[in-house]
Image (cartoon, rainbow, N blue to C red; front, side, top):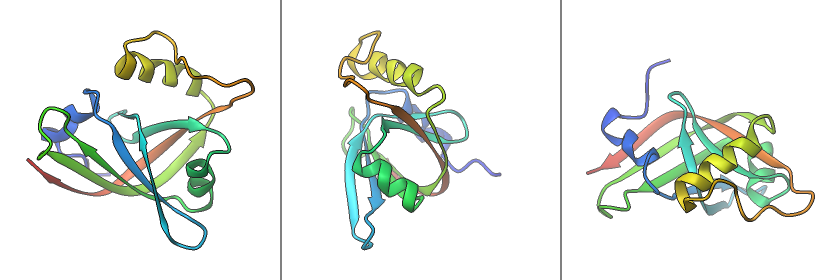
Length: 132
């Protein structure tokens, strides 16, 4: 598979750059949520809690899009269109702690809820657009 994420925009995944994740509701309307995101060299990785609206949407329809704005230059962004190719709880707790270190400077994610099940979504990028 060719690399879809342009090299010159991969730094956005290392910054405290929030992504806006668009999923599809059952009636086809878009739903957008700001999320923490990561890139493993192949997939864009998003972490959420089981049962949330975006979780239900991605399980039903894997088509998604993300827009990541550079926090250092609001005129520089990356948009990624793709499909969720894996949904798993394996490694999700470790990953949310990794994201807490990146975004909050904390070793552990502080907003865990009792009984919450963390979930990883691996998104295969299929197309991008960018500026900057």
